[in-house]
Image (cartoon, rainbow, N blue to C red; front, side, top):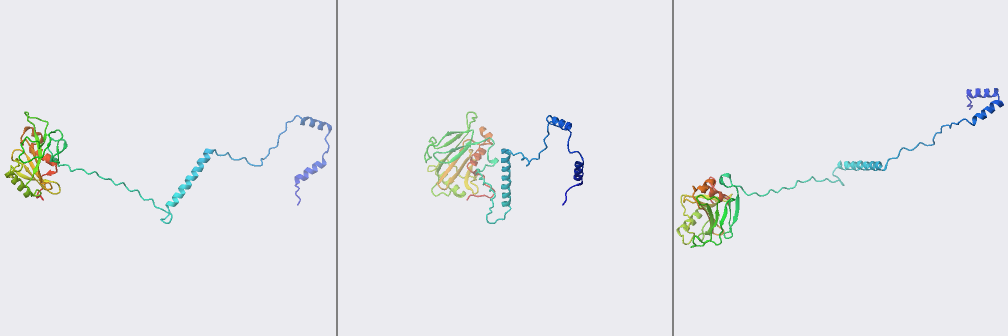
Length: 296
């Protein structure tokens, strides 16, 4: 195929018709000019493109970490969507820790605690092994060092005695406690049995505690424990509040006495000595019976 263009043909014809030699003057001028003319290089096309700027080491590590996080997240997401087949496990839901509530002793009703008592102290008898609470501003005036025995005098140390801090005309209030044996075979778990035991002791002071109050219309029922009602004889018609209750297991009777009458001046802050006695008994779990309640 002939690839010669019209332009090539005209150029060839012009060269063929024109002069083929330069004059000496023109040639000399050209030679002189070529030594002083600064040459211009032809632009060169590079044989390859330059590299993009390289990533820094820190940028590369961050990029790799990002790729790893995305990969792990994808695996976790795929696993979370799997059915409960082989190789898949369910993570058990966290179970709330069981809270054990502390055991709180029952608080006596406000009506069972005298208004002048702000708190309590606890006393355990080394001789009789009972535990009695007394008002926190009172003190232990005497501690029993011997068990009461028939024929013992009032001077013998068989009383636990508690003293109030307020003296009126030189006299203070006390309440005191002791234990003594009941008649053999006494039924101390029923109201009738307790009354029978107290009647026998009152009739035979030389054999039993000689200050045992005799049953009377002023001896009323109270209950020890809840639920249930172990009998307690409460006496306040003798002028001095007293309480007696038995222990069927040991065959003993606990006796508590407030040594001042109900209208004693120092007892006024407690609503009287009867109310003071009821407050002391409430700390032993002794309470007034509910309607229709009778001892076991």
